Image (spheres, rainbow, N blue to C red):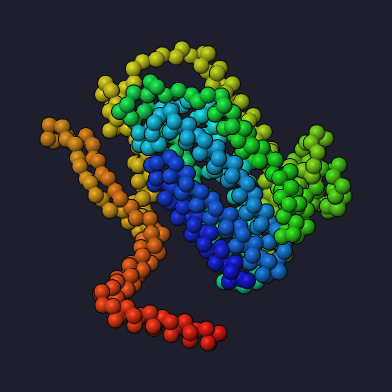
Length: 443
């Protein structure tokens, strides 16, 4: 069972990393989201693989944490990915293209779609206080609990997997920063006039708004989501998992008296009991307490982080509004290094944004340059370099193409049997019949 768990863990890790690498370098918005789905399902698979290994090594509590992290991330992905695909569909419908190299400036023309897409981008980038942060935090902290495993090679496998998942999370931020910035910020990089681009109707905005709110609620209320998942996954999860992940810090909770007084006191000083007289439930803190070999406690409260972030944004807005009132704002023509107008070829594109990732990981992508042209002015001044690449996906290059070549070779060998001689065809039939009779006799 440990071997199966390691295979699942490795497949999930590779899928997550490869998926986000291709998403980061993709310029088609829907293709970017599709590759990102590979990454997110890879993270879910990592949690499942960790849970299988913990079950095999007789750590039911850690297995329960891993399974909850996996299914929590699956739930989160279903919400924010639906939101992002709706946003991408709205952009495609109004702008007429999904090419991030051709988009830009849509936030002024489609503000509600831009706001919803921003929430989805923050959520999938695992930034607090949105839902993606909670499930990825749980996944990473569960991988760190591998320190309690006695078998050193397993700890090494978990460490490598955790490092890859952390790199995946960092690349996800880069990927969706590109998706939002190149699609909605700056100026349009399309030759077409964006005069026909307008906001979607209310019937299209409402589902995006609902999904955006769900992204926030699933992020700031994990202490209510985890017990629900624990109840639904009861056959797979140790009943004490929810007691460990969501301790009953609220005094009104029936299990509150079971907590050690010193433990409650330490977290009380950190604000773990905030809201106990207003909100029902067990508390607002999610934590993982280490065992004897790893006594470190990992704790977080996205609800408190959301309140602090909201207050900080409000304070920043008040200060900015005060400064604007005190100073006169002067609007003038855009200055672009002495140019009267910024040429489209001089703007930063999605391809240029992701090029460092493509260059650093050249061995993974291995693109083939099929077109390389340069635009010149007065022979000496270069205005643009246009380079078109064709990439063969890693899975195609490493698996599908070799298998296809083997099948094609085998088919070519079989094709030699079709030579038109009737006696040979009769011999083939007799040999096949003899093989079938021997096969039936053997069994």
